[in-house]
Length: 277
Image (cartoon, rainbow, N blue to C red):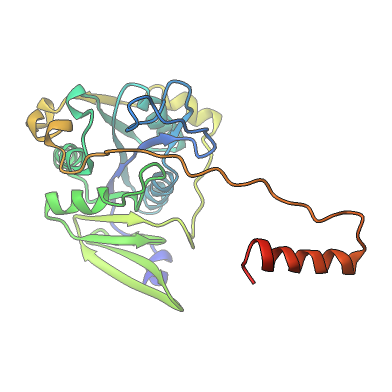
């Protein structure tokens, strides 16, 4: 089914990509003084890698079928950089929900704001990563779909649409599942076994991105009651963050021994000291 659709064009589809900005996966994470958050002053911020994959999928669908791609994100003004990166990749416009009332929101509070923004945009398909690399909750796409009353296709690694339905392939043990839903719909993208890799932003794309429309929205602009978001409305709260325990230093078997002696000493250490054999 999906292979046949990939061979032919279809009706144009308008796509919204829900994009989260996360710390670079190579960043050194430090716990803040409150013990419940991280120090953000010196972090490098990037597009959540799973959402970057969703951007690429959206652009492939646009190139094949026509339509438009709008990026929807939330957070402070630093998030503009990530939206502009997606615009430089080829997306058409962006929306940033920048409202202090969202600070401290759990996934549900954020999903309410995103769902309201999606309703205003009225796309055919909403795409986002199945998870984010910071808190790894995997709730955003499913919650937005539920709030919108739209079907949700999860963990896709290949996506297509004929303008009336959206189809995904999802890997399972020993094979794959092909699933489809009527539009409008939400599809979340998994990272492993992906058929497309995110493109790099070209220099012409970066220059064009500076002129593409990017709207800043408040919750009131979207018809969302601020009391439904933020720390006060959160159903889930972070009570503590802890760094993993430090590992003990590795041990090197005596270099003066011959190969047989090293093997005997290694077996002895594993049996008597580490007690793993």
